[in-house]
Image (cartoon, rainbow, N blue to C red; front, side):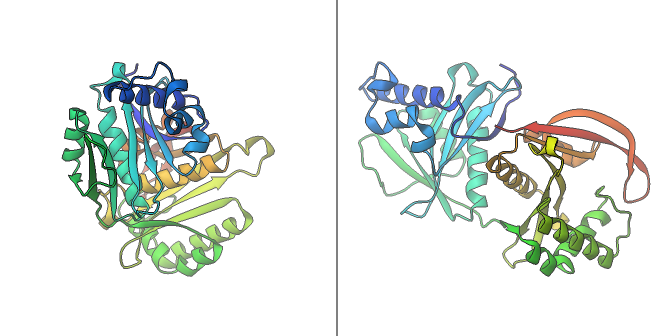
Length: 338
């Protein structure tokens, strides 16, 4: 396998999921002293997960750790909140051949980030006490033992309190227009003043920024652009991202990530990754199979995109002027979706 692993959500029909679930459940049953010779011999609930994950895990998010050749090194499931009100992390499994490369930690980090993005106040999991490496990882991540909801011998129930996180929501055209002159305009002005190459020169006047967002609202009304905003605890807008769709008949399978913006006061908290993941998940749900974007070469944004599994396609010199008016190169990126 490639040394570089990325973590991203997978469609439940992805053929890489069932073998990982089978390995997890077969290993667990053997450790419990009730070995099953094949997935068909597993207890009914576990057998259903392996044979029909698209049904058994229909309300959940499956995250895969994959290498550059798209080989699955591991997986984890983040369940949707149910009666107990907290999402649950389960089925953490890394292929034995891929262990020692940080896959388990990367999968957990992404699962926790996504749990925080839902606004959940906590997340829970259960772990068999003999799984010492997993138990040590969970403790390092801040999970603590709690009163068991599943009292099987040898099973430890744990919970982690999550920090309040900005919530992300999709804006309809009316919502974009409602915030165009204040929160969205201020966000764009802050980004341009901070040196972000977003198509504008500094200083950007708030009235020009508001006018651009109103044009975006018109595009949203025509169905060619979708917008998500991230709100802080005081409902201030801390970030935004847009997904542009082509109206060309031969390009309806793809979209473009455009104007991923995070306010300077909110950077360093994973908000850019959260906004990007939101747009990507929506693109998957809409049946898109390819996303593209461009960003100023050697900008901080490049690290975000590479970590999220985007592939550089090439550099164009002197592509656009930065806010100070200096011509800069841009790097083109693409990401194929499951």
